[in-house]
Length: 364
Image 1 (cartoon, one colour):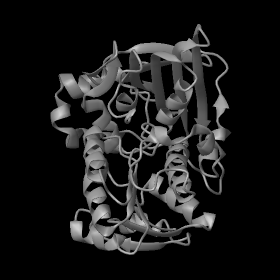
Image 2 (cartoon, helix red, strand yellow):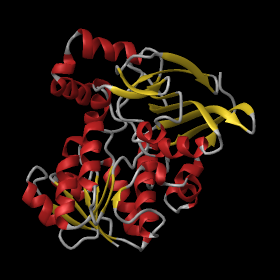
Image 3 (cartoon, one colour):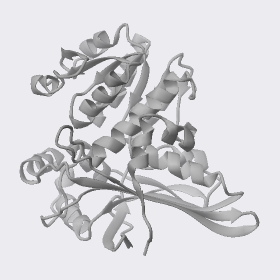
Image 4 (cartoon, one colour):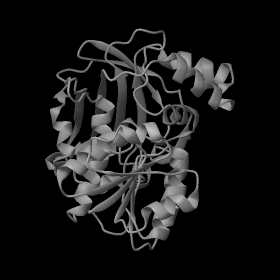
């Protein structure tokens, strides 16, 4: 299968390596950064330096390929998806942006090619897990989805290190969040809905952020009383971000905040990803609860270190395109994450990266 990968950042580099080394994909990677592309010199991939803001260059780079994998910033999602449709390529991305996903859904209506956005961790894997758990219930009451990509060794006041896109981080902190309450789809405010819990003796907080539910509100509307998604952080993080974004008004000057974070908050490869899903409802005539709680750790090997967020995000999108290649997913139109069967993903050579996770023993 011939794929063109848009974006050679940390996540893009992992995607390129996994697909190229699998033997089933011919990979071309395009980016606007010479430095990023040079990092791929050791891989059996073709590279192309293009202006990713130029629509014609984007489209021309796709011609002759079967699929496009978009690992560029979220604000380019609709542009890349539109050009993929023109070029006749299937489309996969990692966006958490709700508005972009809705527009891609409209773009996919009646299309001969497939469009599958939100193929990362959250949205992505978290929705696949939640939907899988709901299948055991005859009557759904509550679905709670919690995910955090956290530094293993927090040392600053934010108790946070950069582990993925700053653009995506600020985007999910600033936009309204979907949820279901009393069976109705509503919008809730980001950074609100604060709750505290512990896993394995470590204290965490969780609060509303945008995008993590993917399309589950549409899928479960009328079927569940309560559905929500919250991002997990160490205690105190949410209050500082609320002060920066809301009290100091930096939600209206996001570029300045992004520049400050990039300059002052260090990147780490030593991280851990938490995945925590609870589903409750009627099952075999009883009111029951199912829980999926995992920790996924960074690969700290000296030869090829990978952060936990690299592993989990690449596993999601590489697993999705691999299942698509094997025709285990629809071959045209819009594909929801919850159309992926969790057993299929975990059995997949890429999705099995989630199997190196450790099941959490207790939740308090």
